[in-house]
Length: 322
Image 1 (cartoon, rainbow, N blue to C red):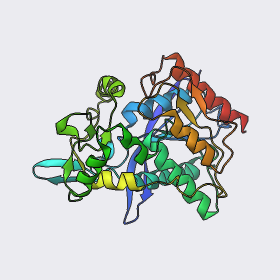
Image 2 (image 1 turned 45 degrees about the vertical axis):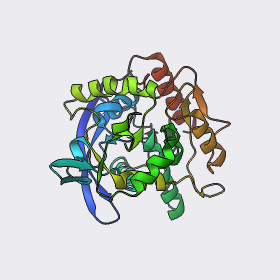
Image 3 (image 1 turned 135 degrees about the vertical axis):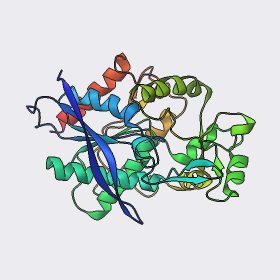
Image 4 (image 1 turned 90 degrees about the vertical axis):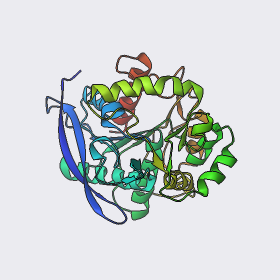
């Protein structure tokens, strides 16, 4: 395995209404001897933090010789005040807009293409895979260069995720009636005070996220996970409306894919990745890579054998495609 270095970079993102610069990081081997491997962009889910899974995947892949670019999504951590943070009623309220996160993936891909001279692999965690699917679809529609390989992990459709709520229809109706900038809790954890939260969490996931992700952010010197106290009602409305999976079946120009899911994931069900595999128009192999005993992110730790096995599978898939 290679020793690793990291450096901070900036990259441009062309949003629908503005072009802005975000901070990012590159994790790479100390030695430049492995540049025959393609670069990798890693993007994460709801809170999208380098101090969490960005550094974890970045270091794990860099140890195998890859140059990995990753970043905090706008509105969180090092990019908190670039975009999607507003102040009202004496509090900071975060906008979580998947179309913005799609544009950020496209910006990261463009930066890597310009910096390293070739299109990257894109590896995405959870809701980050929804955003990157939108980016892959945009590249396919443009008819130009496409990424080398798409690796969605723990994918879920945003509307399907709402089934975890106690009463998803009542929550949806209530949130849809709120003003767009009204603050709502970041999570629905099944209590009366959180029933209009943005992101539903099942009991098994609730038990680990605060401890594991909180520890990652504290160790990285970032705002403690999740990096926000409230999100806007529009975040929910836009999230459940955004579905880049719709209409892709039979489309042309999509990257090959390795779709990965944990067999015991109770938050994002394996059936979500299986549906994606059926509809995905690129070469996604014979089926979803289902990892036995893997849950959602519980095993995402550097020394966990299941995490190491997943990294090994990604490495093998990249090398097999040249």
